[in-house]
Amino acid sequence: MKDIKDKHLDELNTPNYMWVTFKNDSAVLAAREQKTFHFDQHTF
Amino acid sequence: MLLFAQVACTQTVDTLVEKNQWALVNACIGLFMMVAFTSTVRKMLHEDKLNDRLLDLKLVTVDDYTTQTQLDPKIYADFKKTLPHDDSTVAPIMAFKTKMIEMITSQLHTDKSEIVDIHFGFNNSRMLNKLEQRAEALKSADFQKVVCI
Image 1 (tube, rainbow over the protein chains, first blue to last red):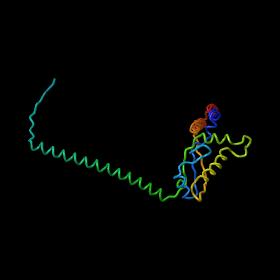
Image 2 (image 1 turned 60 degrees about the horizontal axis):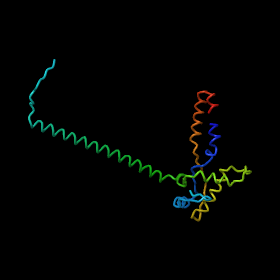
Image 3 (image 1 turned 90 degrees about the horizontal axis):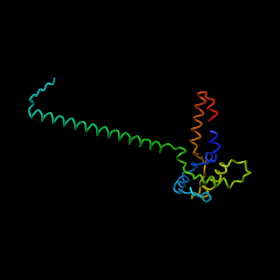
Image 4 (image 1 turned 180 degrees about the vertical axis):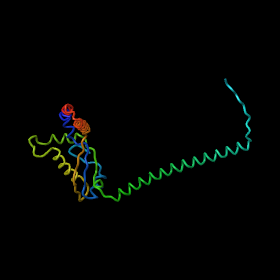
């Protein structure tokens, strides 16, 4: 376990999935329709 | 010693025809039962799925307000590079979360949008496997193995 911690600490701490919970219906629908967002130079 | 006995067929043609007809009737009944059984099972499965869907529509859960997306690991890696090295007051993932909320809120084409929370998922199956192995070793009091894991 320690070797994994040491070797892959960055990998373990890197998020691969994201769940965004909205407060209202319109925001959820808008987010689902929009599909792409930009974060700095990246798109997801 | 082998004994061969040859007996003449005593059944009449009418009897054979009658037997063939009964065989045909039996085959038809079997086919009908098979079709009825298959269609019943299919109908039950369909209704079950439909009921699940109806139940899902009736229940309002947090999933209805949540969207899921896959993140490229480079996004977080590049974000971490922008953080000041001496700033240890906020965990990088929390800073990432705060900035992500700002970015999504600013890019959404709605008048009113509020993000309740963001959760992240990690590819940590290898670590979880090791933890399971460690738990098994602890259960069996194999402390030498525990240290190795």
